[in-house]
Image (cartoon, rainbow, N blue to C red; front, side, top):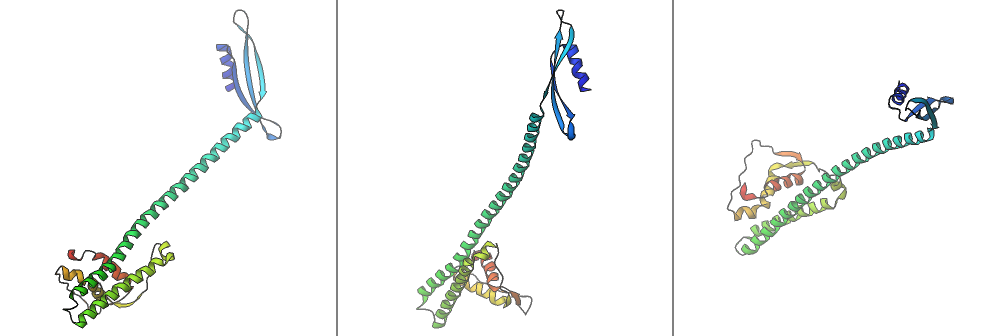
Length: 231
């Protein structure tokens, strides 16, 4: 059908036509032929014959096919690399977000016990002459507890494997929830006293022993009580 259309164009428009043919050669190999058909006209402009020139363009056709194949392979490779870069970008953004959150949490975890140490030390220094030895010992005990918590956090901070895993391990034990709450309350006692606040406890059960990681519970409660006058 294509051959007839090309011949029709020559007879109708009397202009040269070039087109390609793909033939089955020996050993089932495809042979690509380029046919150039030139109309031969007489003096009156009438078509008298058609000159056909055939060129074997199989090598060129193979090169073009190879280029198309390479282009397709390259396009697939680019798509794969784009997906990999997209995943890497998402991972980098998640890491950046985790880093920001970690720094924020770390800043709070460091400031809270340090603030308690400084506040209790200041109150003890200003009132040491008016307080009884027992109360002074209690201040030193609270300062010590804040120092222990600060040291515990620094030890966790140095545990790189836990930080790289994006989570801290839990050290579960049976602990009294009331005792944990009282320790957090004692940590903020200086601020509570400064603001003339009163803290009361109400429990619906008598047994307040639970299995937990006391240090993690204290961290959560301290973070929730970051601004004690608001509670």
